[in-house]
Length: 417
Length: 77
Image (tube, rainbow over all chains, first blue to last red):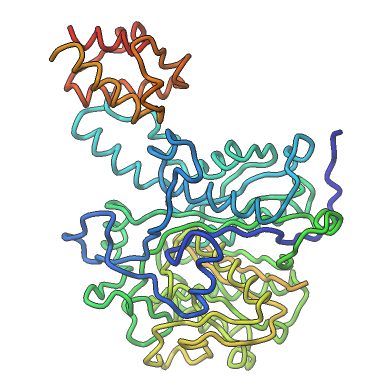
């Protein structure tokens, strides 16, 4: 029996999946995040002796063979494996009845900020050492960022929309925003949406080191990711994937699905300013937040928690704080704000999706994860960053920011049902 | 290198490249029909064999290498 989407115009989250440096799976990550545990450590998967930054948040308990066939698991870029695994978790968690009739209305939109750097670096080495005939036929399919969505669709048998968003560190948030619109207008009944990243490799680390964007606190990595703290010296690389099952509200209700929350507002803008630096006053960030609130039809007083982009770079933390003040006014001093990057590092294209998941879990469990490593107040960052310890709170609406190289700003507002 | 040595090496590379079990690989195994390889898998397998044996296997020869035994014969020459 063929079916057609009958969009209700409302989109809810019915499943979540996550792979983070704190562990593979929500059940490993979330309690450790609330406990304020730190996942940043010396890099073990590559030789870092010549690198300015020698630590990161590595995923250490992931086995690709648990999620892919042996042949793919061996050769595929890690960013794709993480995306497939997190998607499988989100689909299983949702209990969505995937079958011959429904499959053509379920899709994948799991983006990546930088794509397959691991395969890219290895194949470039083969090219320069052995010539063009030594480059693998899998070079192209495994470096293109859309292959996460491609492999997710192939592995899970999803026949609906399969696309990809690439907006650097705003990717995860933009992917959810775009998938939200896809479901809302009825191009799909459900979408697996989010981000995936695996940039802890020779090329990725070298590039970000040269950009002078990362912390070089090599003698004390566990205290290196310190968003909003005056003693910060750059972001800390993380890796992993976050995927959400977005589903039409009526469809979810009709099948009695567990609902984590509703996507009610998405704003996305551009700074039109600089390739890597955010606008100093967060001009584009201000508009992204305002637009998301307007779409949600709520006031700033209704936001109970902000999951900040909070990268632990001076430019981001000061600019984002200024932007929050501009949007929230006096309320900026009352709303709790935290950066979960303090514990898992910056997972680039995955970060927005992981943070959306943390917002949903914060609403479910009525608790706000902390900003750890907060010791020395920055005079320019004088808001409530939920320092060091998780905090109980009734949370009905959350706002989450993501900003990316290229001047991308994306904000998502989620609501508890 | 004697023929058996070549076979053992080809078998090792095949198992690793195609993610198949040791028992599935014998001289008569066809890469595409028996071991699940598609055209891209075959290209990559040949590259891995070139690396392993320090050999150069031209494309024109690859089309004649359908089975594990074909490859062993070719490389043992």
